[in-house]
Length: 255
Image (cartoon, rainbow, N blue to C red; front, side, top):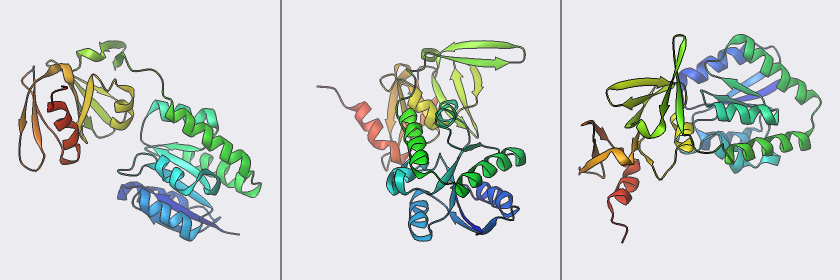
């Protein structure tokens, strides 16, 4: 029997790259695509694929939301795909769930795909469900709040206290830490970093921006629920419309 594979990723180039890798395997009979979590849920229910390559970081409904919506016991075999996040990778490893780290190499893909297809030939549904539950539990209980960043620079490592950071900006597969006039790049996703930061100290105000609440000098209200946040350093960080409620809550007095 030839396999039905579903690729769920919100990035067209990522889907194209994965499709190219999957199509090179003679065991694959058909390849479906989903552009977001909701499409992935519908495709899993309607098409009943044998294997899903599921992106973890998708807007609105991420890969974990897909698993929860479909139900762990009704999920087909899954290879999770993640662009970053050391905590997510650790969660996958302790649960023995297959994962691919972007950018996906041919060798790593072949290893994960071979492992997943071999499990399909000798399925153990209860074991797969248990492994996925273990992974989701590990993701739901991340390590304690981040207290410092370790910044690698050539042959040395610089330690930056979290509270020294003025604001954080997304930069492709990295984040840029703004510390006074200094800039530091860290290989981590915004979602993962947000989860590791203390929400009483840091606030995400835009898909690409997180600000240190202690560094805010004033906030300018614009039209359509948008704001500009001025920091003590003089930097001005725009908020996104979808994060307007968070900024409005920040502006409200606690009494």
